[in-house]
Length: 278
Image (cartoon, rainbow, N blue to C red; front, top):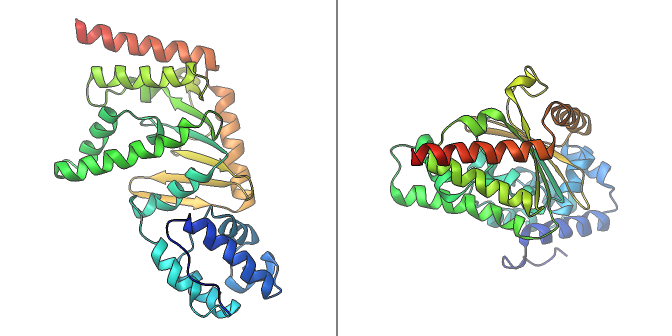
């Protein structure tokens, strides 16, 4: 007998993962055996069961067939498919909300979770200069909502490496930049986040290709997320994630220390404040 449909108000993705585990165990399959039938990795099944990965409709249909769950996963997967984030980022944003630690390298702009309202607005206006005010306002609010996870005093551990270009490129205005950098400095001084700056003087480094985000979870394997212009890929292959983790470690070795980074961030913010007064 299939389980009854989930209550959408009760963390449906986590509940869907829990039901997958129950159905898999009822069928007498290990994660590796189910993964083999779906042509995916065992870690991917673990992430589905832990609720850190989204279940896509094609997998849901196969699960219903393999586990004899009478359309349960297909029905509930469709209910979970809606997201307020772009398709290329939706799954990463959902995983981000469940992560125990997030390590991110930002080469071009401040990470979304650290942006102020004015900074985010300037970014979205640059991306979509013809968008209506309602569209921009919704995009900004969705981005600000992601920062809610930082209100918890301990979880997740957030460690960010900012390329010096992020500090020097004026997004919006000098006033917007000063506010954004002061916001980050305040989070650092509150001991809520760790930030290092990768200076121009570091020269060539291990992540010249672009952005990188690494996430770890309490009961699921780690993930890596790489992103380009309107495209992003969430990676779970252990060897690939390990390689990206080494990339991040090399970045931390090339970056300024946390105390030097804070001093530089506050110095650049002060310069922006002085420039706007002048």
